[in-house]
Length: 169
Image (cartoon, rainbow, N blue to C red; front, side, top):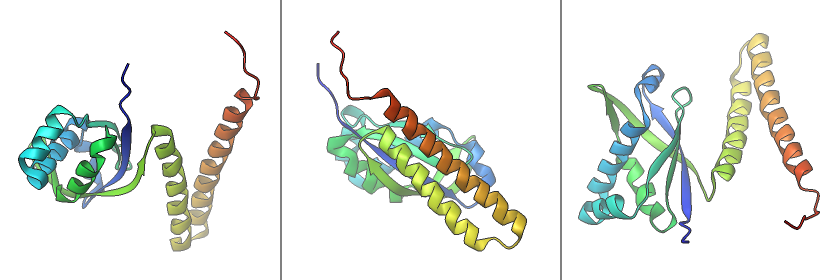
């Protein structure tokens, strides 16, 4: 059996109006990505995208604007180089100006998730510096602690399952 190696592009969807993020679906991002690859790389990009690229939008969070795109390892640079050519997304007759900020390229979904946790924690630390009132600072500190505690609990449960002993089946 053949195993296809993949790369996961973790992108941040930046829009001018944050309220318009709820309009987007996976297929809208996929169609925009296909069009961008076609425009940037011509017939070669269109052929690779349709036949062998194996592009799939695995995750789209409408609240935070985080997008996880899976593509084949051999052609992930083709997709990555096409991201700047996406200047708007169209859904239900509405065009929303946007751009994709690729923040991480990983080999697995798990490494992308771990990076996203670290990235969000760093963003919360930056937000803490911009807080004006004590109530805002307390809310941000609570959010930082919730990220940290979830990460520590997740690592403890992962480590407790593997105690080094292997069983013969």
